[in-house]
Length: 155
Image 1: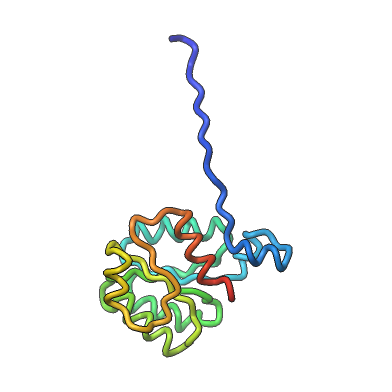
Image 2: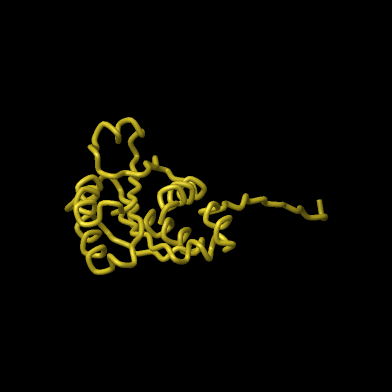
């Protein structure tokens, strides 16, 4: 009593696209800075948190409030978008439908689906849609950056 308390919080650093850093000599933020990510989720708070995390890691982020908006954003900024992060269940167009349309426009676009369902339940719902990863909600920052890093490794 009367002395106070000291807390130490240790947060692990996550390396994004580490393979790019080895081959180019760039920092992860520099390597990520050239990569544009389309983030489509109808949950505003979740979309905002993911977008901030990605921006903080150096990615260029394009946000969409639902599947139809994701298509509009992609068509407007297609040259700048290198990966799509799509919620499975969204109004107007779901993640699978958006993935199919995106793949019809750009066959090699990396796509990561997000869902509250288990990975197997998601896999049961999708066909060959070019999905490079599945994230189960709630999503940690480490899982988010890891999935984006894997999906964009060849970008």
